[in-house]
Image (cartoon, rainbow, N blue to C red):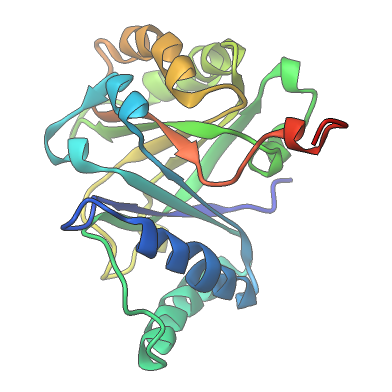
Length: 247
């Protein structure tokens, strides 16, 4: 059984100057490590767009085109306590003067983990895909159509779409999430969404180019609006060659 029960997504735009390096330094070295105090915090990761990644986007509806940064905290049991403590910790750090930086927020909220798939090529179980080193992610955000029957499409996601995504070269696996009333909080962004992360072990922009037609075919006629389909790079270096005999 997967010990991850939900993902807390925080999506943001560029800062006013367009230079987010100071913010990223603070978030990676100060803010994100503090979250591991929480009993159900399993993993925190973030990704950022680049010029090449933006050029490889398959969809970006409205203000979703402004999403430059993606942060995901994987949370397990006790889930409700972890979400509440996560929000309280942010307020506590602000009281200590350690939450002085921010970027314009686009979306914040916790989504239930729906399912996980691993590529057969990766030789890992689906439950550990996010823990495998990766170069970045392909991020798909969809907004289900109100009143439309979602069940047939969700079944297609399980038996066709996610397996097709993870079969693409450079995709090690994919995890899919959905909003649910059971874990809503007042500060969460309004709306109903499904979000899918494909974990990539090749250049994100190059994989994004290959995934674009797959995504376009899969969501044509779907009972959902495709809000964003875009690659993002990991901030963590993924280069074994630096440690070879010539280094």
